[in-house]
Length: 272
Image 1 (tube, rainbow, N blue to C red):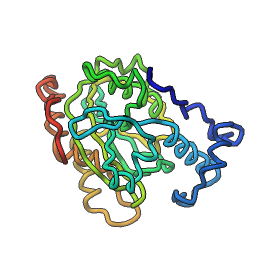
Image 2 (cartoon, one colour):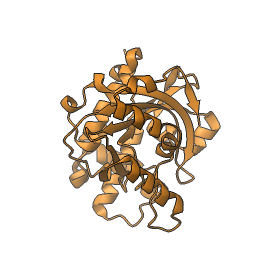
Image 3 (spheres, rainbow, N blue to C red):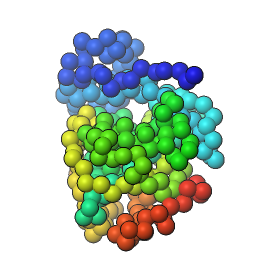
């Protein structure tokens, strides 16, 4: 039987000092290693919730062929020193949700995110955890279960709006991206696409902003990201940019034509 790790999601950041888990982590984790960027008291508590979650949650470690080789904390999996020293690679997923008008839902990551705060990215990006329901390999069911869980957690999208069998796995990519020198990503990322009209209730702890974009609006957003060099510039997550540059526009064609299955390639692991 797999070990059961406590979930961080019951922490209440608005009264976090009353939580026993919050108190425990406050005793051993300081904010010295995390740039608070002038956060207020509530934002700092939210950051500590994110920090506690990276100690509590266990990511799935894989080799470059996507074979499970173990598990480790989100903390270690995102610490560049560990990534470089031990070549830690973990499984992840990126969801691309389109509505019936063929617009793509984007999110801006919360200011309290440990990696890549306030960058714009695809609908939802996270990790399947080392638990039975998210380790299922058949039909990519474990990753689909994790995607459904995180769409609720981040965007308030209920499971009924995003059935697991409606996700189309389109491919996998392997990439490495430092965030701020200390933190970064080294992921084998499953790319999932779903076309559904959904009700949204974004979680402000996770998401700063959301918007649907057309193909042309996304191209304009990319141009702004390329042109910007000041503090107000649009920033895109590195994994989202890799997908935009290598896959997304071809997928968009298939979405509009109703031929999405033709775009799927789950045999190849693209090393980008």
